[in-house]
Length: 272
Image 1 (cartoon, rainbow, N blue to C red):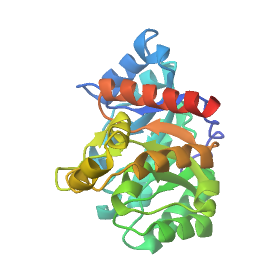
Image 2 (spheres, one colour):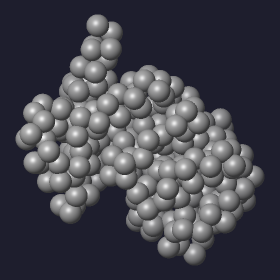
Image 3 (cartoon, one colour):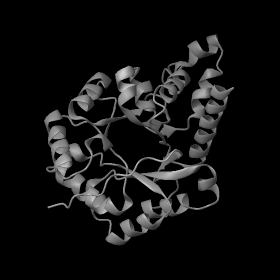
């Protein structure tokens, strides 16, 4: 049986980035992100550990978790993407939480399940193990209506992670209830429709804003139907959920830096 955990830590005020911004494994990336030069200079003090594959992440040796805990970083976890295909998703999550205990992650992001009953089972076991239910953040994904995600989060006492790229792909707009429940923002520009699923830097949104009307009408479809509303939605999320952690969900360092610059410019415009 899992021992009662220590309280999950509160998030810091600076930006979070993924544990995959350079070629290499999770530990190598976190060593880079803990350096005092470029990463820290850009305000990176938290890493979202990308625990995307259940089996591979459960095989990390204890030494990996120990070294991660020794780095001067805060953490949150993105729970595996394959949970819906696991026979015991609850067991996988609780094992990962037990191993990540020394990191004191303040939150864990999870995708909706095809069968909501499986998510309800996970939340019940999570709470029984002593982890705060509000620290389990349900993320909106294109395959599930935002309204359903928000409703389920409220029903189960979960927090919300609102993903800008997913919202832009579906054309959905979060309402006041979603923004109030939001504890994390995943910030990136989605790739053009039909081209793949890369998470592009936030400055790609501004490129769309600079199109004139005729050129914009001609290029909307090639640009994944992203118009200036993309930038407006990003700013609406930032303004509407000031309590939410800002996670630059871009998986290369240059893209992370350009996205942080975009955020800094957005803050400067707001202050001005």
